[in-house]
Image (cartoon, rainbow, N blue to C red; front, top):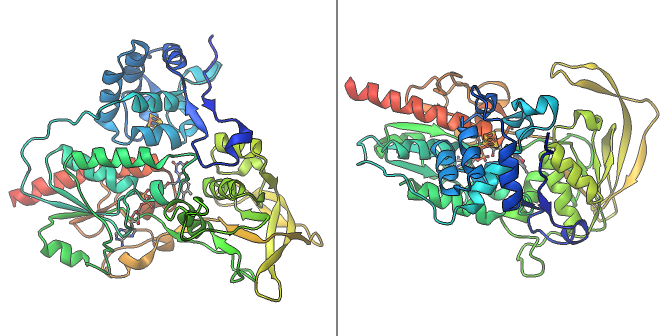
Length: 459
Ligand code: FAD
Ligand code: SF4
């Protein structure tokens, strides 16, 4: 059996000093050969493994036949953000995780092929949209959930407006995931496609502040989708967290991505990370922050309280981070940030941990090893231990049913909230999750909204 093809990558020596994309994807020849590895199963499991149900064998067949226009057309019937998903989806637990080839050898590189088809598309093909219906829908938030919900509605001729609080659309795709994993040009191009479907995007508008949900109803919107994500960083609650040099990953990455702090010295808001940076956490956010700090010239250590086996970050990105020289300190928990006389961070007191029995999340619980405290020297610390929903919008809607940590409770089949004209999906309903799960929810919600609008029109 032929081996899976690997992407071309920027050399390690070069990439640790720039923010350009690390992976160059598959060459045309490799993509064609990789596409030929697909067994074209009659009952493909990969399709069900993809939350937006792309017809994977069909688009792969078209790549094998060098018909790239047809390949991207098939993908876009189900997914309006293929260049993004091909780059950041956790394929190993989605479509590729169930690919039958994976049982005996390695799964087909579905994500890389999706990226290849997206990157080969020269001119974006816009599907024909019939005359607009008379029932407009408002979407709050322009992350993957909002963009997908809006596109699906627009494809079905509904007038849709997205309201976004920031000055640029895209959510985490724009302000969180760094350029070297997801070039902003790709995000901009795919959002441009969403706009060409007829979706209007209004930025700099915070719903719950600039406008309320009732204002949206009064403006004539007949249904509302909330896709405001989970953008509020969690903190550790340990002494010294207010010292200068201690950042949340959210602030750090936003400064890098949205405010272009990495473009030193042109940037108005540069970030000075010093020589030694600690990143606390073991997820994608932690690794993105660590790799940004490395590119700003620092020596970076990731402090994680469990082991590499429990790390939630994508395996590929963990491998990239190790290759680039990020140090990993496993079973290590910060218990105190230590400042100098001017209030700047100079070190972190850490405690060694050991793993006990699995906790309610199914992962083995870390417990402290008594007497194992030591001090590590760092000038910057970036806390990346998770995000929660921001209550800004939901606190203005007292009748909306909320769950644990302020997530919006929805019917999992329909994404409808306890208020009939309000639907929600993505991180605001699950807590921090993935791009494709947010997109899956956005799509499901769009179909429920269409059903809801048909029902109210009949009554
Ligand atoms: P978001 O992407 O958070 O978008 C929500 C949008 O709503 C934002 O633009 C926000 O500004 C806007 N908004 C918020 N409140 C309001 C309001 N009141 N009014 C108007 N607009 C509002 N997932 C992966 O699958 N693969 C990865 O590699 C990956 N890496 C990640 C790296 C980082 C650094 C981070 C932070 C997350 C990563 N994720 C990854 C997770 C993924 O990005 C999220 O799960 C996904 O973006 C959630 O989509 P969403 O649409 O629900 O919310
Ligand atoms: Fe796989 Fe994600 Fe593409 Fe779906 S969108 S086929 S899960 S890579």
